[in-house]
Length: 88
Image 1 (tube, rainbow, N blue to C red):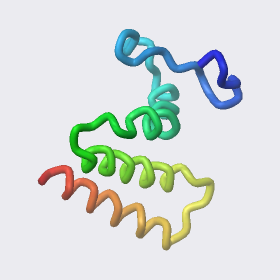
Image 2 (image 1 turned 90 degrees about the vertical axis):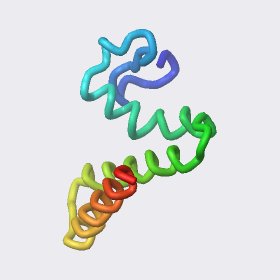
Image 3 (image 1 turned 180 degrees about the vertical axis):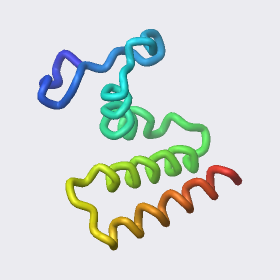
Image 4 (image 1 turned 60 degrees about the horizontal axis):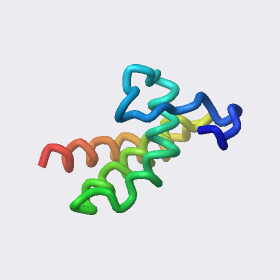
C-alpha cells in the first residue's frame, strides 16, 4: 500500500493478520481492485475464481453512476444466476 496513492482509497492492511482493521471501504477496494489480481491462480479449482470474478463484475455494475434499464436487467439476471450457481 505504500506505493498506491491515497486518492485510490484507504491503505489496505494484511487481511490475514489484521482483519479487524478492515472497514467497508477497505473491503470494497480489496474485493473490486486487489483480490482479482491477488487471487488469480490461487484456487485449486478455477471455477471458484471465475465465480468470484462474476460477482465482482456484477457489483461493479451496481456502482455505476447511472444505471440504465438494460444494466438493471443484467444486474438482476447476474445476481440470480450467481446465487443459483453458488447454491449448487
